Image (cartoon, rainbow, N blue to C red; front, side):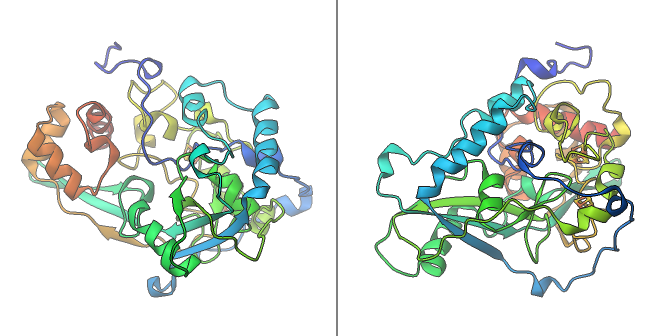
Length: 352
Ligand code: SF4
Ligand code: SF4
């Protein structure tokens, strides 16, 4: 145990159910042909746009035949084998189950449907000592209305549009970003996130196998945003300087999302003032000119009594149940095992 009372980071890795940033962050650097010349790199980029939320698509999708899986697997293996991948054990644990293999119990699969769902940023008021601490819950960490459970039905009814076809969720099994980029659903940004038309990087990726054969093959070149040619807002905004200006490679070991999603004490290079969300980090997305201004909503308030229990690290069943509802499935509020993450993250936000 560390002096803070938390086990040191590397001792107790947990994999959260939602994964977005870290699942395949190395792919852009490892695979993209980068030919921006120095003149193109200089500009400051355009301003972010305002958007009418009613104009944002709820989801977008593309399809690929599963016959593309071997080529995707080759790319994935090449990227893993080229020495650019972090040796961090938690990161390795998080990506080790990923592959482009058709499950043995679905050998009749013909296509994969890759879906990007728009998700807004949430805020919750944590009440303490008569004050309200309004804290961001980024879109990766709460259950939105269009989530993994009902998205499968959407794929059946609105994408396949024919009854009698099997649909299997493989979101947790495939490298989603590479799949999204190769299907033409999105393009990489310098911050290594996938940007989807009409949503920017405010999207959650999902993948479904089906035995329906789509007539089109969306196979696309791996592209980066044109806007990145003239912009460096994300690498300038990264508090830990982990976005490489030239190669599109993210230094995973320095990205503090890796640390605040998992148990353990924060390493010394993460200063308390860097924290700005209950989990994750939005510093490389918020200033991006390809993204529109933040679209947000409010979660239910966390009462003073609940905030005190969180800070004390003393969850009981009633508290877990209440937080699951109020924070809409926030992963670290879902079990006593993961609760120390919530205690640590909230403590640093309220007390720094
Ligand atoms: S802020 Fe956006 S447009 Fe600018 S370099 Fe980063 S990803 Fe590209
Ligand atoms: S800004 Fe935050 S999420 Fe983005 S690369 Fe840097 S530490 Fe990671």
